[in-house]
Image 1 (cartoon, helix red, strand yellow):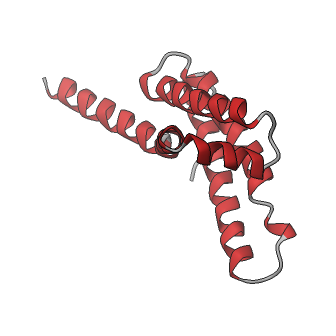
Image 2 (tube, rainbow, N blue to C red):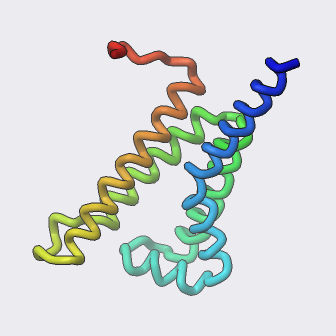
Image 3 (cartoon, helix red, strand yellow):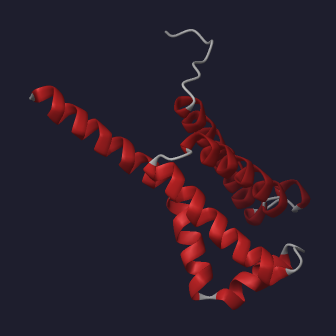
Length: 139
C-alpha cells in the first residue's frame, strides 16, 4: 500500500516537473494566439517569412510538443524537438555577442545561457525516455 502511494506521489511530481519544464512552451503560444498580430510582428522582427505561417507553425509545434512531453507519447522525440527548437531560437533571438556592453547585453547573455539550460533539460528528458544512461561517474 505504501509503495503505491509513493509511486503515485513520484509520478505526480514527475508530471509536475515536466509541466514546469514546458511552461514557457505553453504560455508562449497561448500569448501568440491571444495576440496573433503580435506573433506575426515577432516573426517579421526575426526575418521569418511568410510570418503568419511561421507564427501558426510555432504555436502548433510548441503546444503539441509540450503535450507529448507532459503526457508521454513520443516524449523522447518531442523533448529532442523542443530542445533543438530552443537551441535554434536562442541562436536567432539572443545574439548577445552582437550587442554593445551594458544592461541589454547582460540580460541577453543571461537569457542565452538559461535557454541552453532548457535545451539541456530537454536532452535529459529524451535520454531518460529512451532509457539511455550516461557514462559518467557518480560521487
